[in-house]
Length: 481
Ligand code: BG6
Image (cartoon, rainbow, N blue to C red; front, side, top):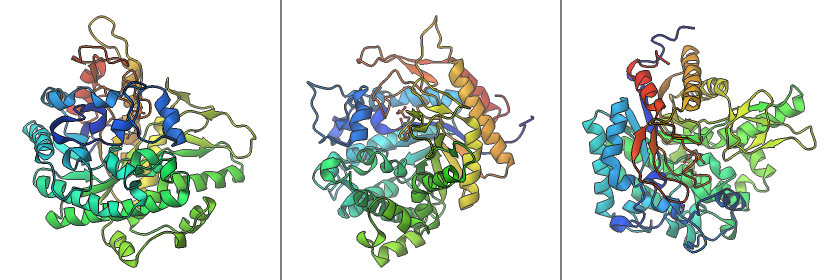
């Protein structure tokens, strides 16, 4: 089928990263420690994260911490952004490390060196005509707020975040048009440590705390929208959710109903509040399913008013894989998957890390989200984590090209379905440290970074085959795939 002129003029082609996964410089220029800095690298990270059973102690003798060095983007951002510009990026999604601005999180006055660093990144982007797209908080809240304040379940964090967002927005609102308040806010359903700074000892095992933490984040997010819109009504501030299209394993209505519930609880709950400005009808039942209730939460009328008055402007989401639900078989075949898992779908192939590849599911996701909310949608993460082998002078990553091509085709279908899609920023446009495993060998980039899981390598940057492919895609506004 002909997808000519499918993508609208001004479509935001680009790439996405997160500060803690590429910057390094974890203790430079007054930066404080973040929860990401306390995550050991290697396969153990996944099980540590899933158990929530750890206490944020950094132990250099026992573990390695690849995030501390990242890919040294802190020193080499100019070179990296230049490469993004060579691909023709229209936008670049990156996050601000909260701890560069507020090292502890509870200070009143920001660290100027941190702000100056991001100003340089933004200015470099603008020099190349690249639109900065900023995630205000991406899995890297200050460690002090997790350890001393018990994470997001503590209401005091609303004011800390408000102050942080206010400083960032006041500084950059004249240069930046797109922001997101919290990365993958709904991931706390399974991994409260990453986005809510909560572990077992601070109550992560109790869903009441997760729900309270979400509420506090919703209010904080609404305050950021308020601040942003007061500075510039044109500023677009989005939510950001992890979305996995979720199928029933068969047509048994029992599985269908369970799928509906999983969709509500995992995919939609947070976005429902952030986009529609009110708690959805299923809230009470969901909370009861998990042993708590709305009455048990600390929610003020003023909070509800804020949520209602300051919903987000667009729906940013990550999409890597789909999931399936089977509650009628005793031992369904579980798959690994990203922060989510599910059961194996016999129609799909999986990545080397077990994530089930499903481009058609992206068309469905885009339709579901757009028709649920009627707000523009933005695919702010997507991609294939794979091992790359250097053969000759270039990495021939046709597997990555194929994955991306199929997902771009799915986006083209969704646009023809009537979906208002703002842009596409594939994840880890330059190789960086994996969030779930801390590995370097799980690569997503168009640009290869010479660094292995043990920290060996020159850190040289080399374009992969996909680099030249994506450049053509952007040049042709998605016509040449
Ligand atoms: C998303 C996160 O969950 O997926 C990113 O927002 C993360 O931070 C990305 O890196 C890919 O996951 P992983 O575990 O392969 O790095």
